[in-house]
Image (cartoon, rainbow, N blue to C red; front, side, top):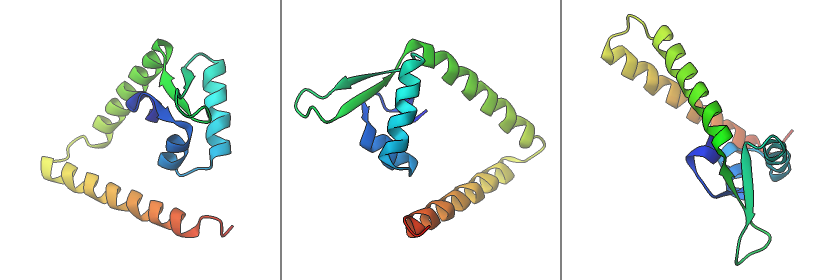
Length: 110
């Protein structure tokens, strides 16, 4: 999804946005490239940088994923008022932020 939302994202940016190491991102991108979900291009100025782009094949998967998430969200929020929906979203965002800060604070301490 990050690649689809950010065409031309670099491997380093992808790893950083996902809070995982560059080796993990490299393996994942290689697999996606083998399956024709992404293509990479070497940066014109810095040959060490590869830019990643989603292919049309990926668009289908992204659309299916988005539809599935939207459907599940509607099921989970059925009967909620707009205020309750907003509160639930705010709580989830806070929980995700807490998790992210915990991961960053403990990175390399395993």
